[in-house]
Image (cartoon, rainbow, N blue to C red; front, side):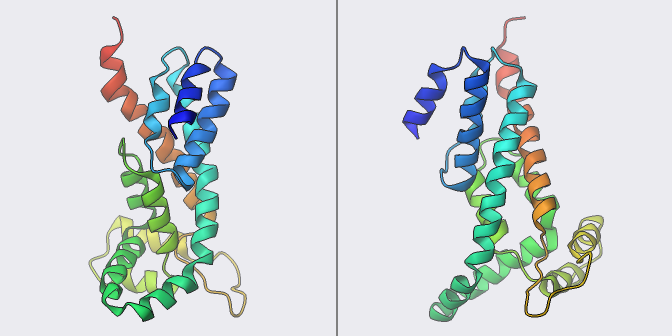
Length: 200
């Protein structure tokens, strides 16, 4: 992690190399490294809009990998819950939160500067409830625009293959939300922490 950031700083004068490394850095932060991607925004010689798009793209590609991993570990989580039943109420609460708030919560939470990409992405991908569970969670309280949109966007567009579990969050909107959150977060960080320090 430190070596990657040091290497990123060392190529700060080359916009193409810097952007490529920032993309890899952002992707790694989304998948395996609990590090703040905002460190890559400290290079003010490259347009903040370019950096924000690069971070959003890295986060989006990383979210595809995390989404796929989340779908594969679902059975292992179920076995773990049977082995440790005391954890079930906590996991049920987190899953209900993901089901009820869905894409909106992912967007808002992921747009907060210094929020852990890795933690959020895995929480939303691994605890992605089935479509039926999401509909139950979303309608268990008062109807809001967030719950209505969450259930509507979770509905399958075509026929469901037999034996295949349909999840509330789908890959394409999940990736799009992560791209948008990466861009928003970068621009927020710049506006709050970097812009005020720039010479006027």
